[in-house]
Length: 362
Ligand SMILES: NC(=O)c1ccc[n+]([C@@H]2O[C@H](COP(=O)([O-])OP(=O)(O)OC[C@H]3O[C@@H](n4cnc5c(N)ncnc54)[C@H](O)[C@@H]3O)[C@@H](O)[C@H]2O)c1
Ligand SMILES: [Zn+2]
Image (cartoon, rainbow, N blue to C red):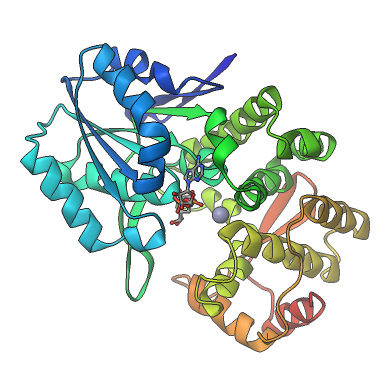
């Protein structure tokens, strides 16, 4: 079974395919789209070893001329140094303006490869083949690409939409369970912000999801991507509506920064953040105890963490939150739930209320 979505962004629209065992169809999918036979794959050393052979064979079978570069695994590769290596290699391989770059890997590769495609010759076509759940349900839709600067994450980047996204759920079989759980948080998040049936689907099928049952994964991933595509279609350059995707993230980013991006996976920090945002909403009288408990129970069953570590104080967290998300108006804007399936943006929550909610989440 292959599910096909169309991410509708006027002249930047693109198809997104979700299926099982479809990596070897990339050649066929790309054939009708590509403007030249030149293809360049960006991947990391692990994914190269695991999945590049299938992709290479499929592309060569239909006549593409393919070059490949791999970067070390991990966040450190979202750097100017690795970007420079990729660009050098694009030039050395004489990639023309009609060439296609394929980002094959997790979110790091999607961001690095996507940004290289955005700047090389003022922008060439690129395709995403995300191989982590995080990248499949989140980074594959939205067109955000970036590398990091020593002063902060994603400080150098561009909006650049892919021409095609291919998601093969079979790639998740080699992913550690901790990364599956962590990626799942973005799906649960979408359920809370706008899709109660998706939240319920995860509740009812959690073990099938964690056991990587393909039909369930395909349905869930397609649904998460469709939701994100709808949000992005209404707000491609992130001026307002898209902010709802930050549910749990203001708390989560602060926690990630204070623990130097080492202790928690992104999704784990967001899980703690969602639990705290929900607690704050309860305290403000806008979210019911029942819904708070429903979200808490699902995160708990998904083996995601719910509480802050004792050595980080509520005051430090609250301070880091303001640094992370200071907006033009200087006000912290929080995404808070009103029920499972609906959130509002609030910019009038006092630090005292924020600190109180954090204190209740240890
Ligand atoms: N552009 C966006 O919209 C967006 C959205 C969310 C996250 N991101 C970015 O994504 C990054 C995090 O993504 P990630 O969690 O995918 O990290 P990642 O790309 O570093 O992948 C995590 C690890 O999994 C390995 N891996 C990849 N596929 C695998 C597979 N199928 N089996 C086994 N191992 C596999 C990688 O080699 C790596 O070691 C962050 O840099 C974040 O900023 C971007
Ligand atoms: Zn996230």
